[in-house]
Length: 187
Image (cartoon, rainbow, N blue to C red; front, side, top):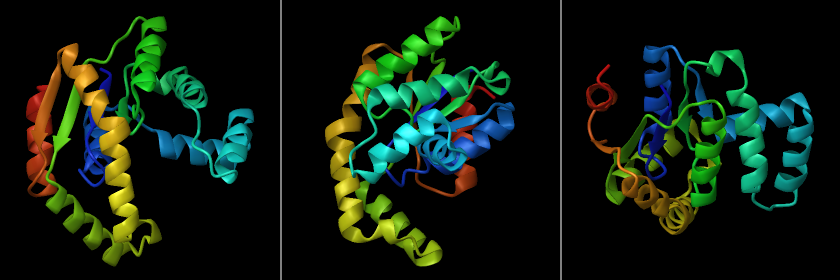
């Protein structure tokens, strides 16, 4: 089963992605994790990504798709994956669809973690306090939310036009949201 998680920063995709992947026994594929791992391991794609990231530029959709394609070719991904933060643009949505099609697969479920801006800001402030993450300062959070609305939110419309988006009310305890996700997946 191939599952795509969508939602704004701080909506709980990462937390829920881990729980879903563990429950279904499939890997979680997160772009940021893949990029960091490829850079750390010094793979050809990692070296290419490192040069782009060090220049301050965004990693291209093409490079992201090549890294995701590498991940999908691994035996652990044969029965599906949980995509977390992989699809951030419509070209990436099209790219993932094309990659999966070459494997005779498609996105089986799209879960959109729906949460208010107020809740996001509260969660990220709490995370900043607990984890001390420098990238969670209020100005950075506002930039990420703005980038999400401009670049990533249209992806939700793209998937909704094709049917199959399930909205998950993502406010409440981790367990309550996990129960809603489990119900949406029928597992």
